[in-house]
Amino acid sequence: MFKDILPQAIPFIERWLQFRYERLEMPGFVVAIAIEGKVEFLKAFGYADMEQQVPMTADHVFRIASHSKTFAATAIMQLAEEELLQIDEPVAKYVPWLRDHKDHRMEKVTIRQLLSHSAGMIRDGMDANFWQLTNSFHDLADFKKALLSCDLVFDTNKQMKYSNFGYALLGCVVEEVYGMPFGNYIQAKILQPLGLANTTSEINDDVMSRLVVGYTRRGREKKRQPIEKHIDTRQMASATGFCSTAADMCKYFDAHFVGSGKLLSDETKKEMQRTQWRVKNSHIGEEYGLGFQLESVIDKKVYGHGGAFPGQRTKTICDPSERMVIVVLTNCIDGEASFMARGLVTVLDHFHNSAFRCDQSTIEHIRKFQGIYTSLWGDLAIVESGRSLLGVDPNTWFPFGRDQEIQVLELAGDNKLKIANANGYYSEGEYAEFDFDFNGNVISIDYAGYNMLPESEYRNELAKAKVPG
Image 1: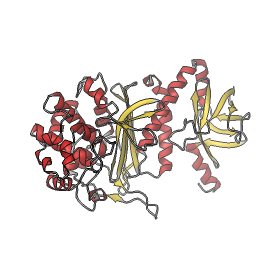
Image 2: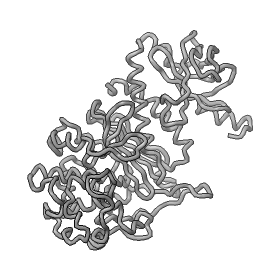
Image 3: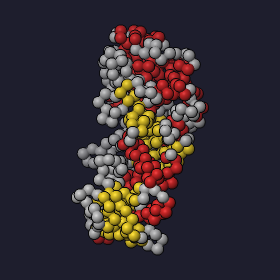
Image 4: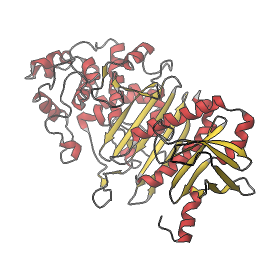
């Protein structure tokens, strides 16, 4: 179980994330890991507002964008369980104005097809510049006008074709069927029952003071620009309007695990987390269920969702085999949230596999060598791996990936490791000798003839030597 290896994994994860933050030129991010309903790791890095130098905290609120679709899908499935609608019936049965659509194929579009993005519907309408913030997001009147003017791009049930308009229409279904504004339904039926006090279906005054500043990509001048915070997504809220914190996201997605007894029946959850469509041309083999993205990470079947909003990018991965939720929230438009979340799964998997191969007497001898070390030529993270250690590159979100150059390091004395296995261009067969202080902390390493320092000390030494950093 991943929960059992957290004492070993978390110190590495914290050092590694800090190391990565200092090199990524990202404004900031928050990472949370929850297992069996308990948040085991919650850490903020960088700044929520770079201009005002406001440090990022775990309490900061992010626009979680397309995570909103999981809330909309949950609402629809709750209504289905109450027998107020059937997901395989036409949407037009519940949204009367849709019957006026000029493309008669729209009359046969079902709720399931909207949930699974298989209705063939246009993604964001003919004018999607609300994403560029040159236009406002559609209110209901504008949304009706925009949707009624757009034919289906494909016939229904032809392929998975992502559509924000489709999920905006599902928000209309909730309102028509329940007779309540979408945001009010979400508050009453999802947020309040779960105690999600920091989550809203749209930006409001309560969360505005804690909302992070979002940032653009770096331009030609290598600088990011802040993006306006007061963005109301209006009728698009069910597709992209939600705001939340990392801890609230953990609580919400934990409720979706089969067996939690929350939000929905287990059979409904299984249906939502079951593959409806494979995502065409996905290089990582993504699939889509009913409101949930499905994928595999190191042969683990996981689900969740991502989100991209002007100035923020986010990702959640849920591993049902571990009842684990990983949430990554970044406050820049090119934040690497998806890679970060997937990478965290692989790091935890490494420590899990390592635990099966170690014994206590060996691990006590080798843990003192662990850390992130730096020289002029590069960085090396030394990490436990059963009865030996590995030397891996910390400058990637997948340090234990099969495509990485990984060195196997074996104990060769109290202060010495042998490079037992490495790429032929590296120093296989040679040794790494460690110099420790009286407290057992590494002062420096002679790594196959190269001097390396603990990463935290390296910049100080560079400054003394006047070597460019």
